[in-house]
Length: 360
Image (tube, rainbow, N blue to C red; front, side, top):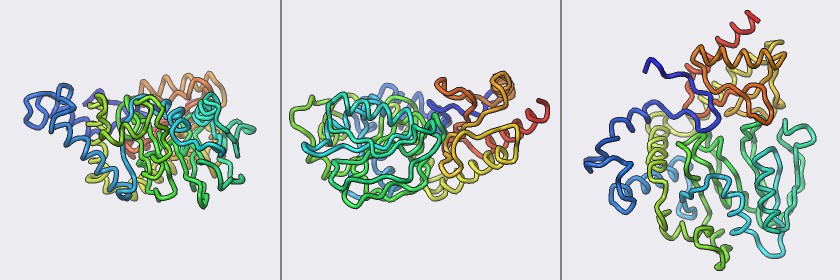
């Protein structure tokens, strides 16, 4: 325990300490099975209980009913970039996208590769993806409207989601999933790579409205059809068992220790405000995202020079504050403050930032 640091990595990212401790306690003998969770068959009652509990907790935390399915699909969010247009595009209709950065750009690229009728109805590329567009025209006849709720690299986040009347929303929530409550009814599909906010790397949690499954073409390969996963409870083949087990523990922590997503959002807002207040009061640190688009999950900032940034990152690591280097495509600094990153870590970071500025 004395060697644990405050973890600000963007993903794989911090996990709640109680989850790590429960994993440790159960590692050699899972639920009296005499086996580790690493060894338990995915066809066993032990794993049935794990995956069914993860689905049930997802339903309760997000407050949606039986009109949605919850599945776990390997390949992370990146595989979903192609599965979505393959499964949900409709002949004669456009598939619409809002481009707010790297992950939106990759999703658009995959839809174009599949030769779908792609329309980019809004983009923040003209200002280096530093803001969330708030002016766009929604085509109510589109097959779906895709957007990325939080942008890890540029540090922007949707405060309010788009609100079309009839077009189903499709959203990549990889980096802010389960960080706040929201109304799931407008969504046709939600997906989240686990490794940022709900577990380790190795799977995507996908929530799909049942009426969207009627669109799935019959001639797709089995492993690329959503119906394959919904019909087999994510066990058409061997799923990422250990990852799903950890996700279940994280959801249990959210539900029983944190007390649900409304409480989680309050804590996340306090964490974000603590760091952004320091940045706004300083002439030394500069935030890179527009203030009305700032992320509560990924705080991106710059220092007066790249040399100072390198020293900041190195000194922070030595002080037990890890993972503060910005994404390789943009440089600078980034503090990823997902659900599992506590207020103690935020306060330690802010104290370090003040002291670094004083000495610089």
